[in-house]
Length: 520
Image 1 (cartoon, rainbow, N blue to C red):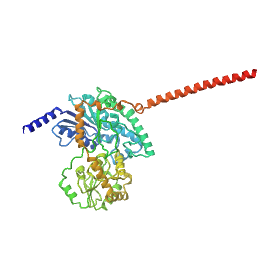
Image 2 (cartoon, rainbow, N blue to C red):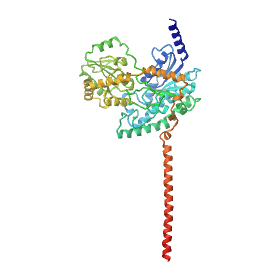
Image 3 (cartoon, rainbow, N blue to C red):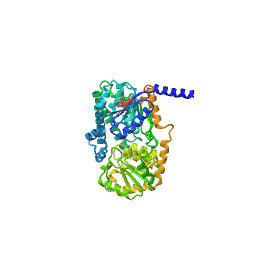
Image 4 (cartoon, rainbow, N blue to C red):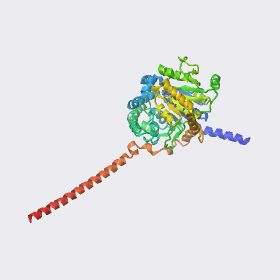
């Protein structure tokens, strides 16, 4: 008994020693991004750390040591400023590779500016509060990173996607264009020549815009709102560690530096009990259930009438029950086998054995939850990384991608019958599910370990790669190649001039000899 008491006291003492004040920043306008961040922040609070989270989406029912600092409605403001208030406008976001790059970074600038202007954020900045660590989502909001320098503490980046340009640059991670597609292209790691050409051009253009347009604008925001901190380029080099919401079962495998940690699937908990009426619907569906949701940014009720009619016509031919996340009280033309709700507990719902298929927009959060639960997909991507995720699902054989502009009765009817009647899709996704869930430790525990590791080792500078200190010319050895080329050219020119001199000498000597002979 005494031993147990001593162990408990030791554990309490250990927890109190390593308890830290952590500032979690999720200024992203995407609710799904904040949902991911909340899962990590809540876990850290449960481990005894004092958590303060800044976001537009406060955590509901937080622990006692979890404080919400709610920002204003940045999402609606930035969407209105950017003109992305409808599904069609979101679709237009992806049109034209180079205009998309500009629109994307303009969106990021507006998001960061509105976030730093928020009264709650300003109050926090000008308070005397201190923290031990800053964790910030990485989504075109680098000006927020300067809060780590403001508090003189280590900084951890939280990547809401897999490894990409935004996260790779923070820790010097390699990003070979031959196998790493741009986040907004619907390519996989196995690209054709033309795809590699397009990917290289788009990736270079995006990188140039990021470094020479986007970051200088973020620096101006830092100078305006956090003028006492060091230049943003120096802060970016100080990032201790980056989490990625990826895993080889979800995205293509990547070479990662030691301070880039994949924790994809960490937010998916053991399934909880469903509401009684929903549980009964699922239990009673002897032919199974199809779940349909277009996520948080794409609004199902705003689908064009032609799309809605095509979907309902296709659903009406099915024997399965369809649960549609529909953001209105009524669904015109609703068949008997279609049930609607403005919200479903998605991750818990997908765990029910009667779920046969998930129709989705293809966001990483949704695809991760589907793979974790072993549910095949039909994806109707709209913008951002959704096409990339569904291209992966299609090539890996656990889903089908339907072009948004080709949502017809024929295309949906074919896709539904293909996935429901061909067992390969369910078999493949269940194999993926085993890979995703076969981890040395649960990914949420791994994430918590690395946060505390950074705290224990005061930023863990020993993990940082020298790559982040090199510019692109140095990293690609273009300066070395240029020097070697200059040496080779110099040697060739020297040989040329020496050979020319020698040739001229012998030519003159020959001419002199001939002239002497003529005189004789």
